[in-house]
Amino acid sequence: MLAVAVIAFILVVRPKDLLPPEPEDPFAHLDERKTAIYENLRDLQFEFRVGKLSDTDYQKTKQDLQGELAKVLAEVDRVRAGLAAPPLSKPKAPPVEPAKAKSTGLICSSCGAKFEKELKFCGECGKPMKAAKA
Ligand SMILES: [Zn+2]
Image (tube, rainbow, N blue to C red; front, side, top):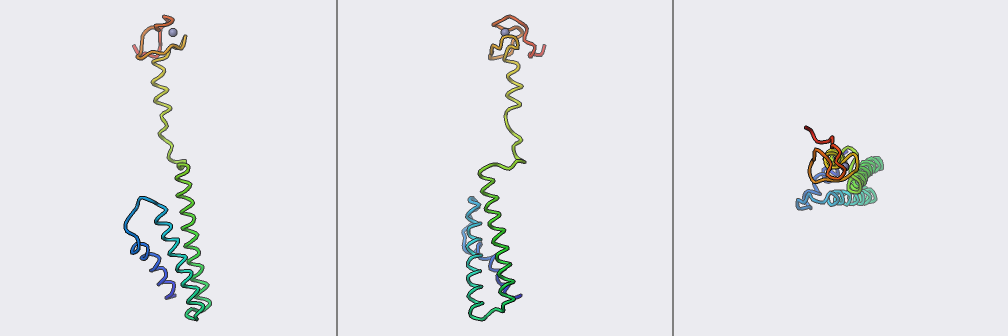
């Protein structure tokens, strides 16, 4: 139990002590955590081998660390996926709608001629352009 507490303490504190604050790269922080967990696993194996830990403590702590490692690896995957393709909740700002609404006033519905500004009558075919509000 004590070993678990000590290792949990090391996991939380160590990355902060070692790393200067650089929140820019999300992988740097995760890599650091991963490295810390690997180090702790190695330490744990060593302590178990020299007889400092009971088999039960060793297995329990190892499982905790591996669970922690799995979480970090999942986070790495999540961050990587987020960088490769933005999450689906985000794409609310594609400029499709405004562009479409704008172009209806500039294109003649009869002949398809384009104009810089809205006209009452098409300069190409002479037909009324209904997009312009009177
Ligand atoms: Zn026209």
